[in-house]
Image (cartoon, rainbow, N blue to C red; front, top):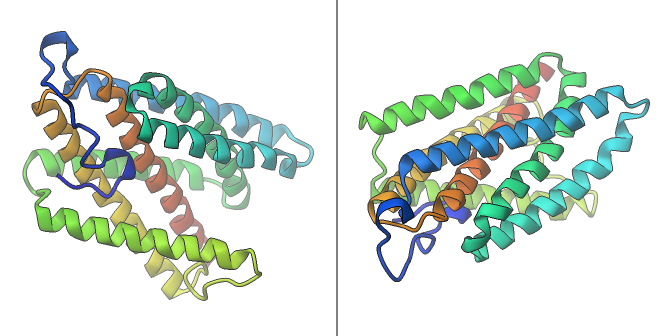
Length: 246
């Protein structure tokens, strides 16, 4: 099995034995833990959202974004390389990431009123639409499908990393970050790829449960799914902001 989500790599469910009974990973257990992580992220996001709107100088909230981003990255790396820590690190990651998204969402809402509500609705709409398509067999996670999504995700990652590095030197990649036709097309492409990663995550979680992965991997799988949802939400915000800027 392949997935372009780094949190749900093919080695994630490798175990020395097949777990059984209450000690085995289940789809329902993963769904419940994903719901809990989303709730934790939501509460943390509301906290910094309100602080941003109440602040005399909203830019004073930038340290929350920077610190939260660094903390989220550290927790994500710990979770990926030490999966047994997921029951602790996954909730912490959700909280830290929520702090970041709260500030980011507030800034976007100040510029484009109503954009956050639209992005949230679209994120969950895409989630449930793709889950339905996956469960009904409309979309199947074949090996070619997985390879294609993984390649596209890798390409997007390279573009974003290149853009970040060039930004340190005052250089930006033309067109893709603008609100013109090319910029909107690029954001739309990224949103589609982020959404298709959900299909790969569904498939991987289903297979992990079928293979009798240990119970703690429910937290790990929920963490991986949350990573994709956060990415999808941020990309939808970016796409909507470009459309509203025209």
